[in-house]
Image (cartoon, rainbow, N blue to C red):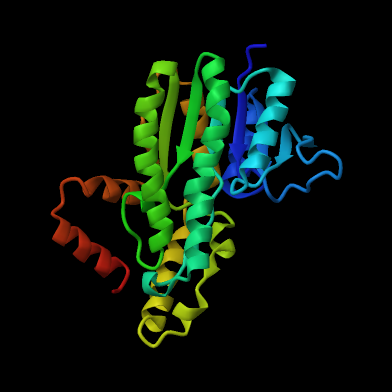
Length: 277
């Protein structure tokens, strides 16, 4: 009866899967939500047991599917204690050449997806006397990454949203936590959508190829997902967690922190040097 009930989105693969499995192994009751989970013919929100995780079909860009998944957990346990907004995706390309469809997909998935999940769970957390919302931003939510501009924009949006949400929910004893991961070796790199217009652009094509090679090398050589899973467990268990956590390669996390005191012109020059721009 004392086990925390956790909902984590994007739990079918990558960081979400590792975190969900690890938390379940440590004794939490874990529900995963993901659009990749097949929807049942009669009840799309019927849990499908995958190891120690109950997986639910839910698309974070479709509020009604999130509402159904959340209601399933409430029907089974009467409460949710922790919500982890992990689901997200990336699109690589020049900002100038991004299509309205690409921009919409990026922002609707990463930012509005987080908003949709929060809107679905907040009433239940409030009715239950409190809980935790853990939103995943990124180092890219602190530093604008070239040719990942709308990905960074979506994560910057999560940062501002989470700061305001933390203040608004404080009276209800709902804690909001922001995690800013660095690069982790997952399937995120291979799943990234690449702008064909940018690849074929006479102005951006060559720079884009060089920059993406650097980005992909850093991602593929990133930390193992278990590092984030262990940090997630500590945050879930903490009675008074910090608002913001950086998790990942020490060089990346320290560089992100340094933005607060390195002159902006110097910081931009360092980024141009690193990304060969």
